[in-house]
Length: 374
Ligand code: SF4
Image (cartoon, rainbow, N blue to C red; front, side, top):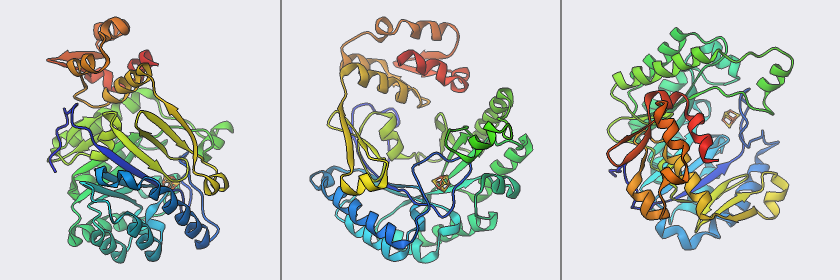
């Protein structure tokens, strides 16, 4: 499917499904996840998930993307994957993604993905440097990454994303360049590249409190981000969102739904959704989720929608359409947010044609822009 990245009119709908289980816990991770005591815990969760998914059955015909994320969805065994895919089999999305960790992939799972229409894999790689992988507490090897990518291509799943992290303490610019060269060797169509963020309730934060973890210098982080952009562009990737790069228009349609403020249903532990102008928030404690998934549902007034539209929309390199914003919200955003003009004057935002977007400098300092909308 071709996707117009500038589109502000065609509405899409996504379905996000959260699998909150991992085989081990990465030292930087603050996602909602845990190591299950046994497979029965997962089975019980999947039953509750099925029940929740079926409450949205009346939306099935209009769902354009499915994204199964986690956690580590690929750690489900074959029976559990079949169970989940069967629940979803009456949905016929334009894009169907599942997150995979290299160590829990098998050819049998790949064949199952193909059989049930999964056409996009997001692979958690983070780095190709074995000592940094160990430092992050990741459990796979480089060789496994190549094996998974080759296997998926053989099976006929060509849309592969690889997640990369930069700014890891101890990582050098050469280490990062090596990671980016390995991306070239993998010959994939999509890369998501995020800087390591120190989050509370992580092992790294625990180390930080003991003065045993030091974040990297901000100038080095900016240099690394610049290197990522330059190198991936050289490889033919289009930089289409602050942290995302695609070749041949193979954007993540599901993620574009978030950045374009389209609707999505979020199911599973701790998931969020945005449907019929309500933000939905599920319980993030398993025992509560199993009893009743949804915790709250909040109506979004016009002001909140506009804030989100700008914060998410400006993450896209091509920014937001000023005409569409005016039509949709019936106001002049330069009057509503006078600080936009200031950010243009200091070179963080720019206008090109009908679109407001971050400048190259603004890409590094996006938060300084986004805070004017909060
Ligand atoms: S980063 Fe992914 S694999 Fe690692 S603990 Fe978090 S959810 Fe699990």
